[in-house]
Image 1 (cartoon, rainbow, N blue to C red):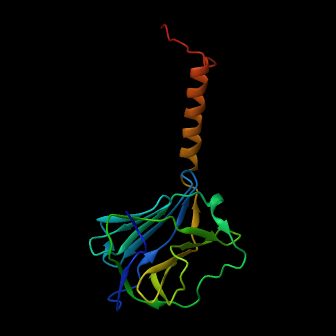
Image 2 (image 1 turned 90 degrees about the vertical axis):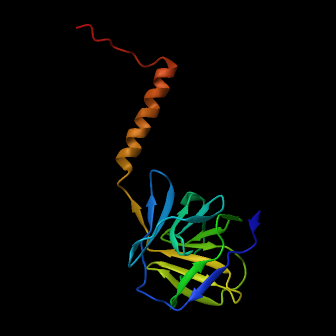
Image 3 (image 1 turned 135 degrees about the horizontal axis):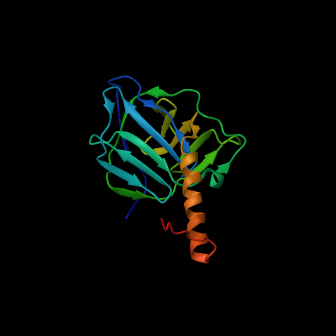
Length: 187
């Protein structure tokens, strides 16, 4: 059963703002948004998931990782997209675990450097800092309306792996079609 809305609990901030920096994995065509708290990286405990977005949570319900599996070429682009300028500090905890939700809208700016992950059409009442470069928008009933991800970068490190995987696939195709000649060492 899919959740109609993602409910969160908002507390007074107890520590520093969590670190967050997004990386678009070019070889996988996915956006990864890790969140690291001052006491170190959280340990995975549960998830909230749709076809295109996975929210990884620790035991307390804190967000520790966001995975966007829809390639950015399929994100809707909007020229008037504006990231909220102001957001309050807060500790945010997700109250649902191991659940599914409907696919959020993925809307980006024309440069595809800022992403709005829109979970509901309702108006946001408050903006909260989830982590550096991540802002949560919440309605009056403490339901998550959206997450803003900004200032993420392309991860070029996997390009060599991508080329290698591509060469392996091409080699297998050639082998199956009979184009590849096998040489046998007779010495």
